[in-house]
Length: 444
Image 1: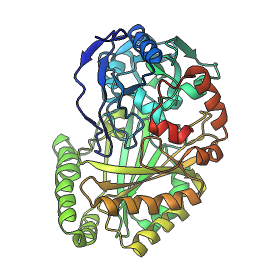
Image 2: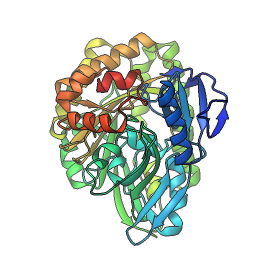
Image 3: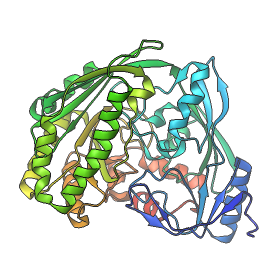
């Protein structure tokens, strides 16, 4: 047994992320139960020249969490560590999954202010990669963090609180500063959402996007390539206790599970075997889009089931550039003849002051493209490359957990706080105990 093993050891078979875009072979996996055990593991690793990487739910498409050395599995560090109902703040253990949080908050009448559409990630993984939802009056999930306890590369257990400048780095730290043990989230009173979904033409959705995100609490749309159709979604915040309405559980199961997952997976498989059919399939399914309105608790509207595996790239660009960038993307798909079965997702977030947030210093629009995980790899790579070229032309910042090819020289220009983040890293992890090839590429 290693002299710095202090948790419960697990076998370390080859690891794959959810999207099957990354795999690695950790030398072993450790399962710590608290910050002290993490500290002992990190200290021992530093002494022997090893590296340590915590891995969450594996929902990043980049290799940000990949390691062939020591892998930390935080499954034993989940749940509530503390609650301050007066301040509406909760402290969560870092391995807590987003889908577990609503049940922890309900007894206290609280909710997270905003979420993305997938809730399989751990809270630490979500904030460390910049996961976000939509709504110009809201930032990404990391902007809800008002405190953190982490283990630095020297094994020090450090607490960072609101008002400490280091929190601007720690709240969205890419796993480069330390292993998060606990995070404190600024919550809000529990609330409901009314969701209104309706089809719109692509030209209308592109042209009205800026007006819609300025007027609505939460607005997004999905454009179906090879068609002139989109599906828009407007979420309006309502008081807790608002009576649920709209389609019943059976109808929503049909829409959200049978159609959005099972049938969609079958159609993607058809596209793999016969790419020429992707375009007519998209045109057929887009004509079947229909409007619906329903009301539910916030998490029942924000998040949805996503069971069809895919690879994804997403960039944040200046908000005002979104309509023109979408037209460029449409022209590129037509010009290069790609056959894309997945819809393109368009969202927005307000500016924040986190050093490496994709919305740092500017209101941002997010454009995300996806490919089915069994599509031709060369064609998918070419599609992502064409998309990235367009986004870079608009000063795009890639989502840290989604596919891109940018490096430190690019980010040094893209982020005003890049050098400040590197200075924090030098203090927190001077010997690069948390380094891996991805961090060496994006941070230098």
